[in-house]
Image (cartoon, rainbow, N blue to C red; front, side, top):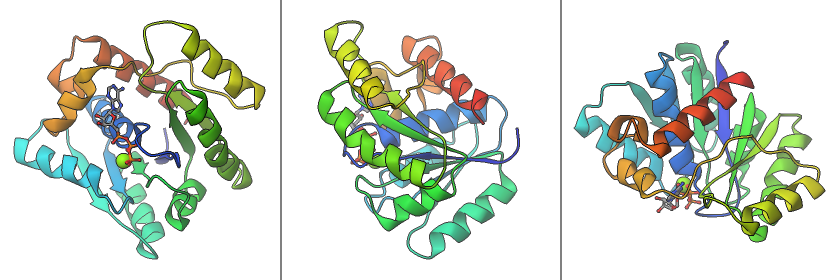
Length: 209
Ligand SMILES: Nc1ncnc2c1ncn2[C@@H]1O[C@H](COP(=O)(O)OP(=O)(O)OP(=O)(O)O)[C@@H](O)[C@H]1O
Ligand SMILES: [Mg+2]
């Protein structure tokens, strides 16, 4: 796999961008890739997770940087040179930064909770990726075990002509708990369902790079 940029973007707040970036980054690092995360969200949530990770002295190395404005493109270019994968965490709005990160992406992941409100919001990010001719896919997040709600959301997305990855993340407290420890679920609960979902997500992402 050549050096890749995976941009996680979605204008809707709280859909799971930062969670997905952190989980994906740790999983790919555990698989032996040189992984960097770039936090371009002024909220700095991913950077806070990174600070916790540094204090906890976790086994799998993940480089964590922050960048905004004109420094963003430069930061991506520098990280790409020294890593196999750069995972970018974007802010919850269609800022200039998000557009730059989408333009630099090999793949754009759009986390989406199984609700029509999230599906509607995802369209804007997918269309931004299409305008930049970058491949984009919705990743379902906080998916309930079963039920009509996820079926309706999948149908609504398909009706808009947008695709989703065949794997998603369930609604599991393990994800939030691992974030509180500067970790990924692959480290805190490696035999749990959340870890299995994260591994499947990493595999689906690698298959598209
Ligand atoms: N799969 C999941 N299962 C359970 N909780 C989750 C899951 N994904 C995210 N969360 C929780 O949802 C909240 C929002 O997640 P997160 O911060 O990752 O979203 P975000 O899209 O980055 O938000 P923002 O738009 O503010 O940057 C957090 O409390 C997080 O722990
Ligand atoms: Mg976030």
